[in-house]
Image 1 (cartoon, helix red, strand yellow):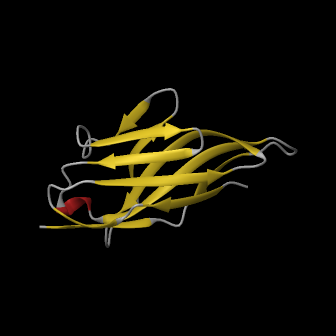
Image 2: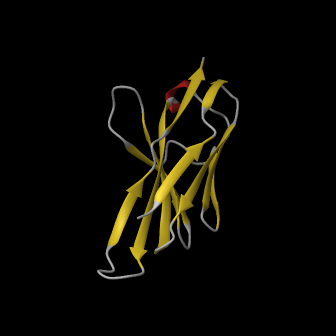
Length: 118
């Protein structure tokens, strides 16, 4: 099992910045790709960015958001925030269990809320 804990959400004015963090606890797993997703109010969850050997971003956040990782801590630096960035942000980790049955699974955090006021 992998446990993920996000932090760093809050209320910010448009144009402002926030930095989200996600700390993974994975005592019996090798964590591979880590990602950020978000779910705006009344909408489906959507991909934001991920990081493995390289980084990938959704078009909506390219040039404004930066994903980074330090071992088992994932970050999302969000600059130039817009009201449409308002959402619950979720951390996701893909991990391989290091003991039988060696299952490769995805895990989700509980989410942290980002609200951008206009």
